Image 1 (tube, rainbow, N blue to C red):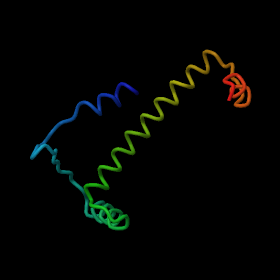
Image 2: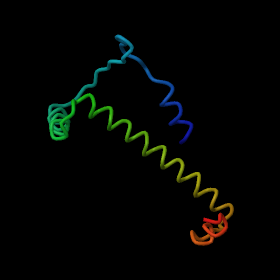
Image 3: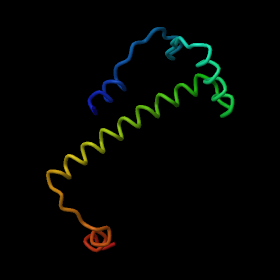
Image 4: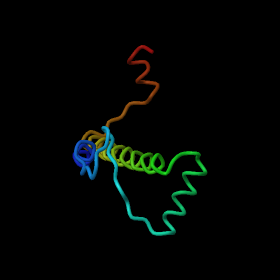
Length: 93
C-alpha cells in the first residue's frame, strides 16, 4: 500500500499544463455537482480547492492506514510493549 501512495505522489497523468499549474476536467452528475458546490460554498472555498483538499485527505488517510498496518505487523512479530511511564523513566524525562 505504501508503494502505491508513493507512486500516486510522484506519477500522475497531466491533461493540460498552463503556467506551471496542472488543469484537469472531471465529469459529474447534476446531483454530484450540486453537492460539491454546496460543500465548497459552505466552507467558503472554491470547488477546485475543495476537490484538492478531498484528494489530499484521501491520500493522507491511505498513507496513515499503510503505516498502521506496518506497525501492527511489527508488533505481531514482537508483541512486547512498554508503558508510557516506564518509557519516560528510561529516557529520564
